[in-house]
Length: 198
Image (tube, rainbow, N blue to C red; front, side, top):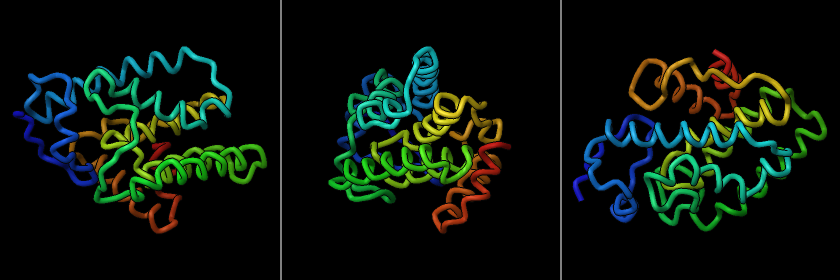
């Protein structure tokens, strides 16, 4: 196959088997891949924002997988399926379902008990979700959309701006985002919360 990708800081490399899951065989560059993925994601956003979702539906393994499939299913055969490979970040692949269940239960508890304010709940969920790294690729974009859905569907508040620019290309905005994620890895969540709202 002719897919030869250059990875930006913070992007998860695909293994050869995962690359074989590409459904559009004419794609050969990162730019082409980004364009097809973005078109697929825009369709997924239209789909998800036209739906009513309870917090229990939103915070379910079924929905997390379904959303990823809607975001990437036109491009990747493995969209919506938990990764089977080990990556440069994330939990061991056999722990994904268990860690995700713990996170979803925690988030429901935070919501029901007002443990944190809404922005912190959504950003905390996003950060832990991307740390689990459920899928072979697309975890950052998926986790940001999940945080937006928590804000809009659960709290009835505006979605985040995430720096106001695309975070796919290597830009100063992406560098600020990656820096904020790395601080959140050290339990410093405030910079990521500020970035989400910037």
